[in-house]
Image (tube, one colour):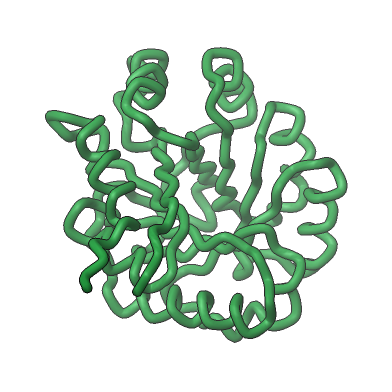
Length: 227
């Protein structure tokens, strides 16, 4: 018998109409979104260029939702303080482009902000072995980062299961986030694998009924108990 799991849903602002950001944020609040996800891209680590710390600061002023900043940038450590000042409640960066990962994670946590690590599809869970005990959360990318609306790489789901098992074996309490191709069709398998937070973009903002989409994602963690 499997108990119900409280799944959180995070909305990536990148999937919104950026000419109407205030309306997009309001839609998130009204639809039951738990976290606003802000994808920061520098045009080097990923092809796109997106949001700076001023954008983050401006979003902070118009919402009560926590802000989760995802740094898809080279040398992420130099941007940490700017985004903490802007109001980030949590910050994640990629293990693939930071040398002193332990130091960067601790510099975030020391300022009272949750610290996370992200993995692109080609990076194995084993890369986390030296820092897995100090992260607050791990974000599994199930698409190659840089563009919204991509189809999920299903082979990445096994990483979620590996992280869930490691969490139990090592008695750790990090959260597992999933980013890329998350929608009502994929949510169930992600939650079954061990995901705690589902990050949605186009599936939410392009939905005719965004609140229903959020409810479906959250309910993916609630299993019917059979006798």
